[in-house]
Image (cartoon, rainbow, N blue to C red; front, side, top):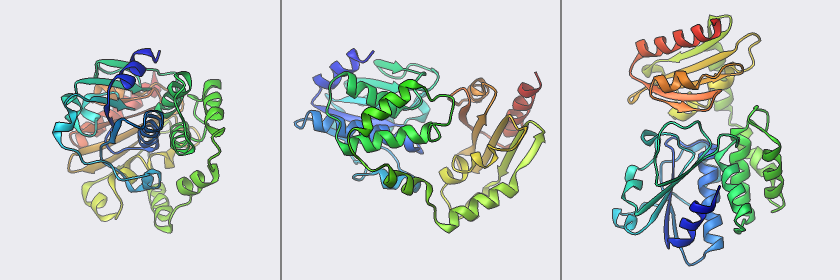
Length: 311
């Protein structure tokens, strides 16, 4: 499975690693992890990480994201991680590279790169990167292992989601042999400032039931701007305050921004991915997202979720 991408990594002396916008733990974990795997395995290579960041996962950064000139893409390999659609890639200059490769675990939406691995059986892209490192005999330092493990636990919900498999635990065990502190990870991920605990409480009070099986939260632009938190925290960070309501099968968090209405959809029962794709998004069967034009389109998506639970 990894032969062609591994051959590209060995071939190119300059490698630029991309992933999706508004990065979550898996996007950053796989990017940071792969950066260190390549640097430690091939110290002579130039390796760069590009893209935006988010405060919630700043603890994962071993160094700032690289700001590079267009010229560096000439003769380079660009690797895109954890991204199902072109529109989601942070820094579209990956197309300037001589060769491109993608590693992803989302449901396939479209071809992005010259060589691609889309392995939906993996709980995370970080787990996929770790499996490649192991299979190809690459060096995995404690720093790389910690980043990859962080990506695995964030995208598997601490190994609770049904994407978790025996392969998940096998790869996690491989990483844990590198002797990093899991306690440090969990302290950084799940110990919050009082502000964020109070923000979750505020969003809990905003929950509405469209039907007994579908819950949603809608935050308009004025409230979004007044909350004092980044849009990632308000959107993806708050969606799962609805996850443990008895009887609710699907839930969605709508957040108005200057770019449109950010939509995070989750389900414990249904494949909601086709609904996200219908509105220009994508993701997993039970965790997907999209960016919508306006509130009317958001309500249309909500109606589709309701209809799905009533089928």
